Length: 323
Length: 287
Image (cartoon, rainbow over all chains, first blue to last red; front, side, top):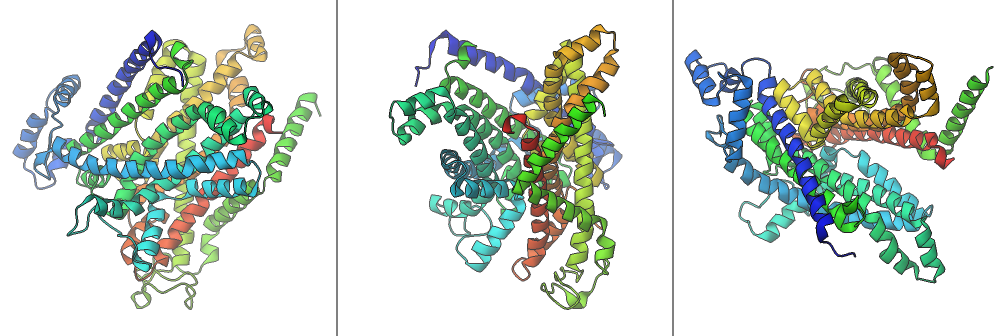
């Protein structure tokens, strides 16, 4: 691999970081709008039907809802910048520690699912492409199109029926056993949720890896490598995969978003104590600060992941940083 | 027949021939047609009312007398509920896709033809929407608008606007530079007529493929919202809400969860295979 360094890469990184600023600004605007798009008075909705007029007015002042919208946004953004995401009214607790604790569980689940997707998807795509039109190719692509069509919440329930209720091999709910709590126990509980969440991403990754490898296999330099008498394993490993990696990294970045979104459903099915399941309850309770905090944290993480993907392009393909 | 009409008919014949050659695409088309017929003919295919409660026949297994697919936790006939659920799930999925395709295509068309600051403003808004994980943004919109069938539809439609916007903008930018569009412009054809008659017409094929590939995702997303209790609200039920309400009975009657999920899977698989087949048939490089 070419050495990474020099002004080209620094300029590229700086450019990408600058591009993330307007996106983050847009994200903050949309998250701020969540509370203000709600029909009716958000303070009255949050406090419920029993709230008195005084209670509603007090919350108005607390949330700054009595100020003009631009002022409200500027104050909210200032507080967010200092790590103050507000206070959850139903829980009676600060939002930031609450969402951070839950986010750890979501990251563990998403990480597990990403590992499942990588371990299954990439090898399946490579095997499919290197044996194009064989029965193995048809079988793996058939499984892939089935995988992308499976609704994650149904896959989870079916896995629970088979592996938890019928075979009794794996736990069906939670992150730890009531009397457990060690790393092995966590992994034991992670197996089914990670497979559930990772299946569709594995399928998408397999399809992209296949088409990306096929694209490269047809290039002249691969034909030359073969003509030189290089073994097929060396042609694929040394020439094809290295050049096919960027589109796969792109899909991987997109899949992180799919996994972070899909985690909301998986966490509900498996009672996984993550941010997603908490946010569903917060939406039903109209707990706007908690919803805003959760959405902001996940969206910012996704922007960060996309930035990382952009930087990885430059690492894998030195031509990009000089464009 | 004029030369232009003959060329267009021959291109359609080529596309149909390519499509028919793919067994997977034909299987997908068969699934979509079968599910659509089930939804349309639901009242004729079952004599049970989907909401008719019979507490003496709770959680009856499939192949029970009078209930070929069993009953749910309230003794309601599963066949009737699945058939009537298909009406809601497919209709809502298609309506949300149409809404997203319309709004997204309009954004893409305006951005591509307008150029300059209009293009910049629209594309940066699209970038912002794309900065959110797909399902999370739908959840955030539901948080603002409140749970419900129409709000769920709006939420997943908004989330998919960037998908269509980018496809149409890309096509517009390519078509705008073609000689026949430049010639039409030189002849004094108005920008509106140019957009509708020449540019939009060329965008139709990619939009049709995008719609077919997108319907499956829409059906899954809307079923997912209903599963979380944020989409379709009782007494109306779709496949997602059926799956949600049946979760607590999976240890005694797995069929109540298996069947609605299987219906969602078949619908999504059908549209995905159909979309893949159409995309391949419309790609001249594969012929």
